[in-house]
Amino acid sequence: MLNPVKVGILGLGTVGGGTVHVLQRNAQEIARRAGRGIVVTHACAKELNQTHPYRTDDIVLTEQLSDVINHQAVDIIVELLGGTTIALDMTLQAIANGKHVVTANKALIAKHGNEIFAAAQEKGVMVAFEAAVGGGIPIIKAIREGLAANEIGYVAGIINGTSNFILSEMREKGSEFADVLVEAQRLGYAEKDPTFDIEGVDAAHKLTIIASIAFGIPLQFNQVYMEGITHISPEDVQYAEELGYRIKHLGITKRTDKGIELRVHPTFVPNKRLIANVEGVMNAVLVESDALGQSLYYGAGAGALPTGSAIVADLVDITRTLTTDPGNRVPHLAFQANALSDIPIVPIEEIESSYYLRMSAIDKLGVLAHVTQILSNNGISIEAIIQKEPINGAEHVSIVMLTHQVVEKQINKAIQAIENLDGIAGLVTRIRLEMK
Ligand code: HSE
Image (cartoon, rainbow, N blue to C red; front, top):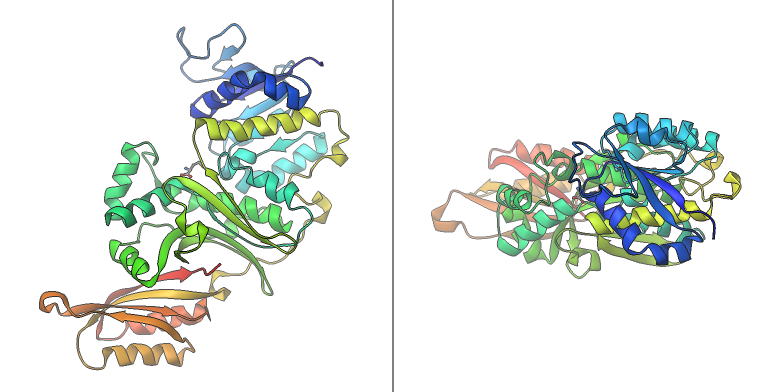
């Protein structure tokens, strides 16, 4: 057997530790698959001390990133720094040094992937990013290679475990968003600053990557429509249940006559669908392609070992193809770099969807008639409607509706007119529906 491939890790936190653990625990199986061993020889970590858990004779530990990326013995760099500043510099420098890179950094790939892949192609090295989407689920490989025969039309995924955990808990316990967020932070599912997870940014990073490899388009993070889950109330969760739906935070990308849709937002999904039953921190991605039809990929979207599993799979892939002519490797974005297409991204106002609407109305004659008149004037047909008796003589009642499909700018126009009615208090809650 050839000498082992040498890996240098930048960042020895949860995921870095998981990667070392998987490589060591399954060393023999990995070598049987890769054709040679894969060993971590160098690692950069913060605040090293004599009792650091990875202080072994086999791994050279350092606090200097340059000690790893410039070491001539290291073949592959695993970038686990997070963020997009130092991580970008280090990745580009590693590429310039002729090293292959494996990263779990979805923000880095979503925002700077075009530049990174161009540099890698120029240098004839690989940049692999399976762990950037769906944690341990091999979704990049499934779309990029497993579905290579297909024209892909649609991908929808639960790609942020924190949001899914919060929505699951809100449904099971009838809790408020803010209370579940605190619980998620206590359990370590949500960060101290949870913005990226709960505002949809993390899901948008991942969706950017999925759309590129599904449709062969450049990475376009700044074109993703982004909505998080902070405005979802227990009332909406309850109405969803009553209407036969569940609220899921989905990343959706779709090929339509108008172009490619790229959007992340809370979504009503019929409760019989498999994806509606993905609970807690788990992730799932549904792909619709012309030859296979629907396929669903489910698994752990985060965690030391699941993410380590994806990183090590990339290490095995790179190891196997080290001697391959770069032109014959799987292209970074699934399609040959010179065959990427510039299909336009559809502005969110132009998408077509059905909608859930909830509004608070004064309980008096004619309010509902005005609301339905506005919808009708905008060509919006109502599919279902709920209005209950006022509770304990309350002045306001909730009116809830599901609409048929309509172009989003029409529903926005109608919502504005409804909010201007004297009989309507506050804003109208609007959540998109997805029927697949
Ligand atoms: N913060 C992410 C999530 C996990 O909640 O799914 C890493 O991508």
